[in-house]
Structures are given as structure tokens and as C-alpha cells.
Image (tube, rainbow, N blue to C red):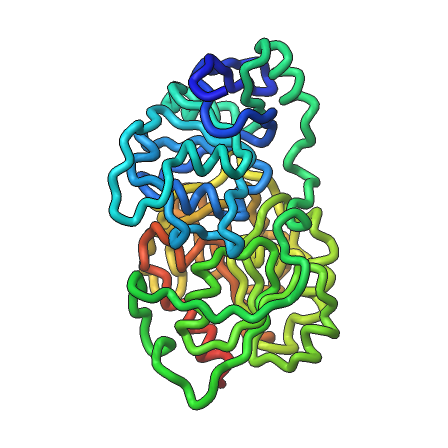
Length: 375
């Protein structure tokens, strides 16, 4: 279907004409946008985007091609449901490139659409909110009906689609692209054993844990708390992941059993699951926070961090009832960006401190986790 006229159809009947590329496949999912000017391959391979049709607000996409080293998923595969861009670059120019964007999407069965007015689409989603959509070359009314019949993101457990089938050791480091992030990068007396519960973990998060001096074992999302504690780790990490956190009830139950047993650090979905385990509630944001330039304030220091984020749900801080301390706030809308339970040696953030591509303002959090385990 490459180059053929196609449409992105939203569930409310709004149509965006364009041209198809990538795989010849029927696509439905929640239509969202991300404001990053770079890092389209990292977006494609982030498991947190599972079930979503992602719109890039940067105008030209594909000019640097694709290479295996920049994949954020551990398996290297893309996880988006579909991809929406303005201008597909016909020229690939980068010394690290191994294939074009079109080839990569086609090989992995991901349908995409170009020549979309992404400025209009982004403004529409900001005004009306994220909603389901469909991509295809079929008649528009069929696409609209397909979008309307797709399940809503609220109540949807997508972790089952992205969590690994079995436990494995992760030893990869950030290598030549690494940025020092403080004392945690110095060798400790012995490796600190960390069990990372994988709800859709990004590879660079696991790399940062290894660089911080951790011996990382990754386990599936449904691993019982008793099995995790039987490994006697120094700390427990709760990863990022897709979907509605309130729908991942088995993960909430497991985290509830683990809180206070070992030092704990959560990122993104891990942050939400920790809050739910403490008795809080979560809610869906109108259009979410996705991009490389999200301002967050550390309430302890007053310092403002520019962060990378990718989430559509948020913790209701007022529902915590004093069971956790709010540590970070989003400066655009005042929503929850960090929690701490000092007596349980547990803390979490909503954003991605390790992001690539992205700022490095928040890498100190890996130091903090290491110090908690060392103590």
C-alpha cells in the first residue's frame, strides 16, 4: 500500500488525508502525539506506546534511518500500533543507518501514514483529547467504524503484550553514548542485586541500572512477590509500561506485598503502580504528556528539570491520604511527577530520567536508588 492515498480516521468522524507507507495492515489504536524533535526510532520501539498510533510533531521523519543500537525495546522490535508523520524523508543519511524507516516498518508489520497535517492533528487532539483512530486505504466510513469499535484505553491491560515470557539477566551497558551520573557510576564493594519487574521496560533504563553497579535480573510482570523475595535482592525496580495502570490488578497486588521489604524505585507505570498499591487512584489525562521537554520541579530543592515523558494516566495525589510524600510536580498542569515513602525506602517518578534521546537532568535518581540499597 506504499504511497497510495490513505486516511487517518478518528472515532468522532474527523478525517485526515495522507499517503500510506510501511506495512499493508489494518491499524487501530489510541491516537496520541509526541513533541520530540528527534528520537523517532526510540519512540517506535518504546513498549509504553503499545496500542497507540503515534503522531510525530517534528515535520520530517526518516532522514537518519534505522539502526539496531538505538532500539529501546529489549527485543529490538517496534511496539506502536501505527505511525503518523508529516514528511517522509526519501533520503537516508547517517553513518549508523542500517535500513530506511519504510523498510523497517514494513519488515515489522507496522502501518504508517505520511503527508498528514500534523499541526492540525496535534491541535485537534489537544482541544478534543486523545481518542481512538484507524489508518488505512479503505473507504473513510469503514475506517471511522473501525476506530469506534476499538476498545478504549481506559480499563485496558497492555502489559501482558509486552512483558517477557521468562526471567533473564541483563548485562548491557550504555557504552560510548553514556553520560556520567555521579557516585553511582563508581564501583561498589560488591554488585548490588536488583530485580526489575518488566511491565514494558526500556532498554536504556536497564543499562543505567547496570552502569550504576547493579546486577540486574529482569522478571515478568506476573512474577509472584514470594518468588521475587526468594531471590533476596538488594532492591526492586518497577519499570515503565503501557496501558491503564488500574487495569493491571495483579501488578498492584504484587507491589503491595513488596513495599517495605526492600528498597524500591519506580518509573512511569511503576510510579503509578506504587501509588495504587498504597491505596491511591489514577485518572486519564486529556491528551497525556509525551515528549522531551516536559518541565518538572523537585519540591525538595526547588530545582526545575527538563524531562522526557510518555504517559496518558496520572496519580491523584489527593487520594494518597498521607501514605506517601509528593516529591515532584509537572509545571504545566500541576500533576503528580514523583512520590516517596521514606519508612518503606520506596520512591518513584512519572518521567523517564534515562531517556535517549532526551535530557540528562534527572540521572541522579539512579544514584539515589543505589544509596538506598547501600544503606
